[in-house]
Amino acid sequence: MARIRLIAVSAGTALAAAMATTAAAAGAFAAEPGGPAAAPAVSAHVWVTTPDGADKLSDLGTVAFSSAPVTAPAIVVDPTLSFQAMQGFGGAITDSAATVLYRLSPSAREATMRSLFDPVAGDSLDYLRQPIGASDFVATAAYTYDDLPAGQTDYAQRHFSIAHDQAMILPLLREAEAINPRLQIVASPWSPPAWMKTGGSLIGGRLIDDPRIYRSYALYLLKFVEAYKANGVTVSTITVQNEPQNRSPSGYPGTDMPSWQEEKVIEDLGPMLREAGLRTQILAYDHNWAEHPNDIASTPPDETADINAYPQNVLNSPAAAWVAGIAYHCYYGDPSAMTTLHDQFPDQAIYFTECSGIQSANPANTFSDTLKWHARNLIIGATRNWAETVINWNLALDPSGGPHVGGCGTCTGIVTVGPGDTVTYNAE
Image 1 (cartoon, rainbow, N blue to C red):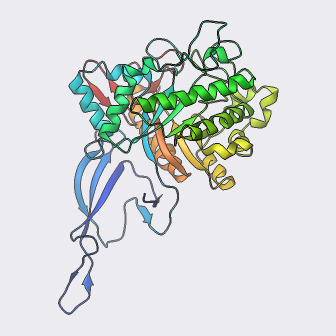
Image 2 (cartoon, rainbow, N blue to C red; image 1 turned 90 degrees about the vertical axis):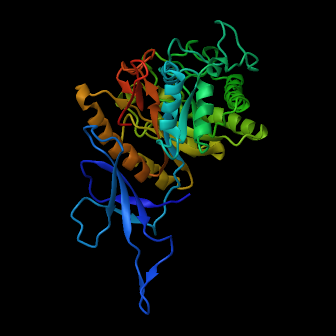
Image 3 (tube, rainbow, N blue to C red; image 1 turned 45 degrees about the vertical axis):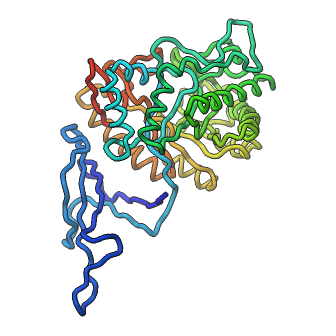
């Protein structure tokens, strides 16, 4: 996979993608008889997105390269420098995204999926974030794959079932992979089953500190990977907890998982994946570039060492032997945190796994605000700071930013579905 550093010298008012083409085949040069070889004529094909949304990856044709002095904003490509290998870009087929996509007619749904995943005629999305069970973006109610009545346990995961995902989520994942065979998936749970947790609820609490629970939860994650594989979907990477320092989720599944508990789960899960012959890699952390002040304020005494040092603590523990990388989100801090970690642990891969667009206070500004913020912090900021993936949040939402249960009431999707078969392509 090519590893070329793009250096933005100046930012313009539009985002452009250009493909250089030559008048002669690669490596061929037209030579004057008896004279030196002449350089081939070079042009670029240009597509542009403008902040007002008037152009959305619009084809503006070709322009010729010139030897005249550069007066426009420029991007310098230095092929002598190589950095991280990019794994992919994408979003998430949440329960909500699957629900709104299935509201489309079959032909409109197929066209939308092709526009998102087709590597030639579409956006070529090729890395998806998959919730393990419910997130805040569900159409009905929170769920896991081993929900039990209060007071019951299932350490052996005999009641484990992904039946919920077989109706819409798995068919869409298979369709996405059929359209783009390069598709990879990072899976992440918002909560273990409630019977594993203090408080007995999917919302808040933490894992019960019991070796049986750690092993059962690792088994739960293993069974998810195996069940998805049996249903034709390969999970490339997995985290053991989404946003482990978000201790007060607003009405949706979430879990306080200090680094010492994450380490225990990883130390059980790593050998299980290896013994099962699975190549799924484990990513640690899966939270913001920096810890949010509200999360710092609610830090329990046994977690103070994790304040702005959570991934470092995992990587300095025996669990690091099973960790292939660190995952980050965008909701607080700065992308440079990923370079800080890279400098400390240069052999660890860095993944950027979640960021949602947000409805602006003035909805008329949402496209422009999102385009500029995402370009600065994700497309440029994340990749400039060693991220191998750039993954948005919901692939699709309805015009109200739903459906969702608790959580974000102003999130936007990569596309908006509805009314009817209308599909609107957002800045993401």
